[in-house]
Image (cartoon, rainbow, N blue to C red):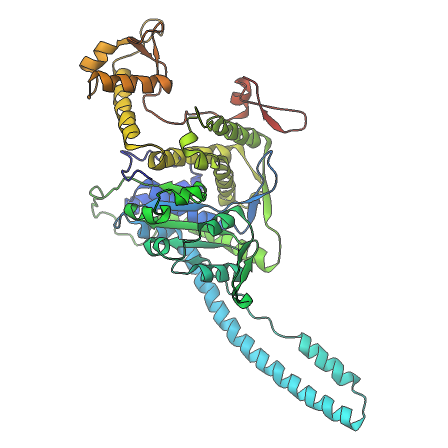
Length: 516
């Protein structure tokens, strides 16, 4: 089941996007006035499509390499201007696809002509060979000439298609087998994809995200397909009420099979009713941030196509030492909160368990977006973690809590903000003490004893307040943050984490949890 009410505010940490992506996101936001999470998802999906054909990523301390593909699912009603945002970010992909489609058409025409000429020559040599053989003459020269011509068949030009939308799953297999380099399943109105057969086999999308071989067996072997090494990202938008089709009749299918754990889901607050214009800007030229973004996506795609045509392996991006410390600290921070009984992230264990991998992929894309990277820096890891933490909170909002829990959290939020507003630091840093009676009489509604007791217990359990001298009648704030969050704001740098015993490194360079 999922919560269909959007958050009061998005609080998307756009400032952590790399400059090249941030400038483009800001420009598109000014042009479309769409919500930031919607715009950012479009930008990141386009960049992932451009980068995934060039590199994979090696996570510190874990075996193997993983793709850097990303799956995005944005819940938005019609009229939220996602089409406008996608049109700007995906323009270089469409443009290159159009160019390559024209080249394919021209190459196919040349191929057919060259093949006709070759076959005509083959038939002529075959007739000559037959005459020479009947006449008892030496056929060595003709045989050599014929063999050389048989081996000189022209190559059928490769058909490169990057963006697919209205497509069946069988056709998607075919496209990925023809072009395993890079592709994106993209739709601004994905209802038909989700309701139809395209998304009926979610485990196939899981295997694609994991970088596994894709196979589709049919009774007729001619219809069976086998795809290896394909890279696929997805950028889907669907109206919120249609998410139930993806989740299945029981409401949990997409989570149970692991699809949503691999997907960055956002339910942005609508900007409709606030998108006013003043008519002062009549320029037809695009802002520099968008143009720079489009140019980089185009260049990265060209490099990916060149790599594919040359038969070169994808580059494997590794973490610089400081970046590895940062990523491992984040991994351990998340893992420590997955305990089934007491873990604060246990209700979204499926997605949280893959949060570090999402961060690794995004950090790799951030590096590739700035240039043809060799390694992943600490700066890119910190930026990626900030973005993924937002998606963790978004996933928690959508899927983790019942209506009753949401109501308690909302009430707790109000009381916490009220307590902060009433409790400036005094004297030597002591915080003000609130009595249960004061909260019931002056705090935010509802003020009945039962509701207040439940909320105070919630705040105590989550460490936002502490009881005074063990009493249940007096309380003080224990957290300077005046908002609720399932994730603390954590500094994952090497210096910070080692000073606090979050991780340590041994002489072999592997990382382990410190005993604290």
